[in-house]
Image (tube, rainbow, N blue to C red; front, top):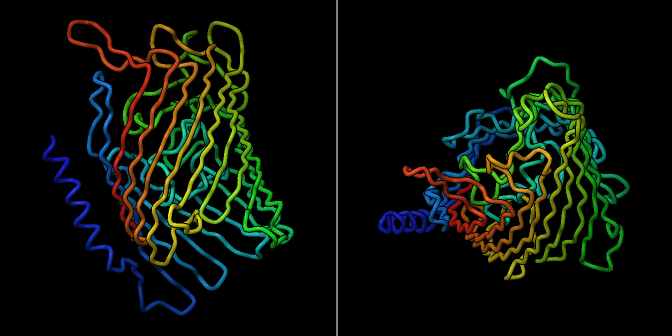
Length: 405
């Protein structure tokens, strides 16, 4: 095992050395002047170490392996098609959309893309400062098929996104036979100092909201910590089968998020608070009730060499050392926990620290350590003698090698 670790690290360093002085941008030529087509992608290779002896989850992992085609048609229409080649993904279509830019205050987007919700979710995977998003990300809407409008208002004082989506997730997701309604989503962010030049700081505050009347097949909560990504384990799990038996019906699903923070040159600080709710769950036995989940996280990100913070992949060469710290909390609804199953915890707290080296737009190395404390034992293994192993904490260390092209 030690030899394989050394070999993997050496491979990453050698490939990185080759990439430092090379350009990996691909463009298709011999196209009409009004049309552009570019090929790109992202590869993220991880070594993940989980220190708990009861788990056999330390491993090499391909976290993402994406290919995309993107470009423009005339001056105002952009498009993107992205597929995921990573091994355990069955619905491989990631993005497939077109967006028409009528005006800075009005863009129209149609297809499959990110449902607008929270700053954490809208940050590009390739520049995200930690190995994984927060625990509460498991409750966010992800990608879906729909129609959205977006833009900037009042000289960039506000930015907004509003859309209507299927509410079932990405193309190929299962659907039930009960009547449901499309999901509405809205995100509004205010930049109160956008009109002044007296300071370099850019504070922001925003709110996001989604609501949909859903089918019971859409009741699927699998909340994961950083070290549980890509494994069968969950901090909290809620499906259509509960401790009361199968669910008969559900009314609505709602998400609300509040965010705030600032960007000042090489420093960014932000926090988010989120509430997730299923309304009027009706079990076969028992009373109708709601299921409520809450989470929050606070992050501090510093570019140690003074480079400004960027939320999209930069196009110019750079040499950045980035330090990021995060504190987070999750609360699950205790009324829907099956105590004997040991598959859900009422609470979890986590702390993360991550260090990234970004030498150019194509090459990045990230090291992330996350400690998670779990309020209730989570069952992880049944031994041959019939005894059961549980965890009440998690130590996760991730070394990531990333290539963008």
